[in-house]
Length: 85
Image 1 (cartoon, rainbow, N blue to C red):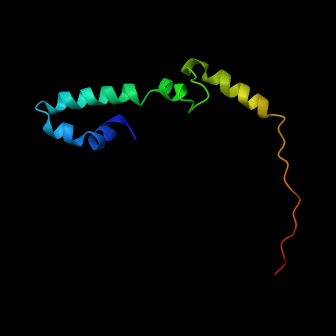
Image 2 (cartoon, rainbow, N blue to C red; image 1 turned 60 degrees about the vertical axis):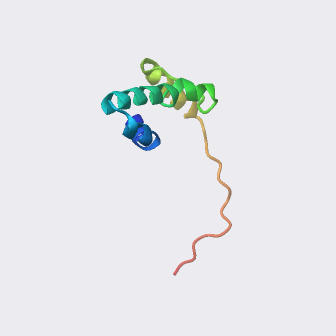
Image 3 (cartoon, rainbow, N blue to C red; image 1 turned 180 degrees about the horizontal axis):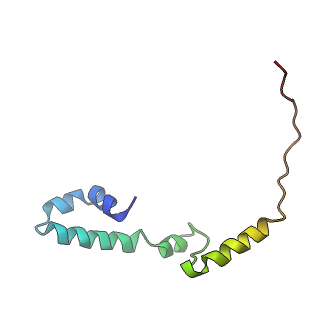
């Protein structure tokens, strides 16, 4: 959920009580983005492995595909085949 939608739900009472609603909404959205919509917060909590800068995305994707090039999936043998009907 984006910050705009979350603000409408989480801070509904604060928005209703505010005298300058658009300003209060912008302030709450900025506060929400700093606290929750930030990849560095998630990385600090160990929820993600790494934060990749957009300029380095192609390098990481190419490297990952190269690692998977030789990967083989081992499946267990089938116990039963399909019965002809």
